[in-house]
Image (tube, rainbow, N blue to C red; front, side, top):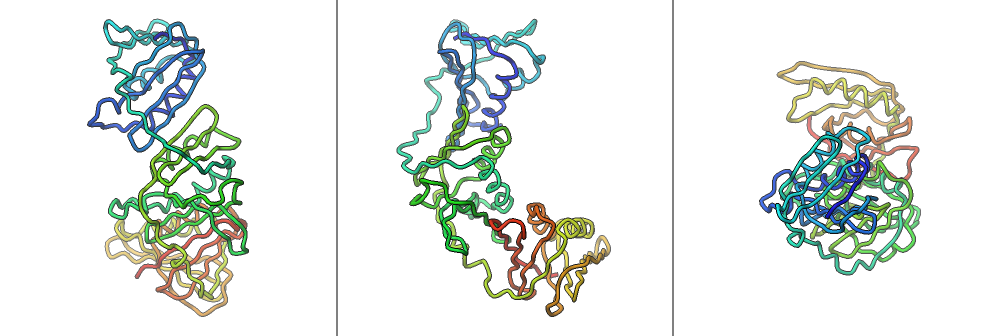
Length: 373
């Protein structure tokens, strides 16, 4: 195998590929990136057995072939090479090493045979549809902060992607995430071809890698899925992931329907006030108390160790006075996703879940569980 490639093109693709590779691996081959060249391009791939990524990049091929090399080391080498350099990659079968040349720099890396590289069997992916990168990015951003990190409830460790009916009876593609303390739901218009797809739970790591790739891409993403696997195809990149094998809970039961107290408030001012007052809250509970009265919201924290904090913010509220406590971190996570000027809170009492909405975004809905303060 021998090829020449521009450093910036190689670095960009290796950045995508090495991100999937775990830093610590008990199986040596999983620390490696698969390199295969031929027909004027270099194909690279990596996997952790649950998630696989492949990407093709243009390269000048002198001798077709393939090998696997340590992903993070190769990425670090290319990252430190001078900008604009031409990089030569050549594998010597006798020494079983990959040589990397650029200008006056020379490196050699130990390799493992490409035959040992595991291939994720995808099987049949019968449900195929296109979704715009912008919509997919919004769905991820509006929901992933609520994905649970608690491994015991593994079925909450991802975004639940499924088709549903919205409040007006329209067909939507919906993403939902919850960790038991808060819930985030986002609807987009149902893409053509997605009707009849099974509800699937896309794992947290796959969501994170997909979101990173979305920053560099505009256009449509092809989504192909079955009940066990999902594949995202765009540009020259293919990201394939196993799905979480579990049943996502009936989230609709968590969304309250009888809340009758409505508060509307400047979302930016509210978020800044929560952030300031929560400076005093303890690291463990991060609790903050909201006291609602006619046209006014009072935020307060009382910490035995740190001290007290209070702030008042004007708000549109005319129902009965009430007090309710929240985890300030969870509240800020939701407020950071509200793009409009006004945040709407729909409350019932101090023990019932509260609904938060962005008045400029009909597709997004959040639910936050209260806490005792």
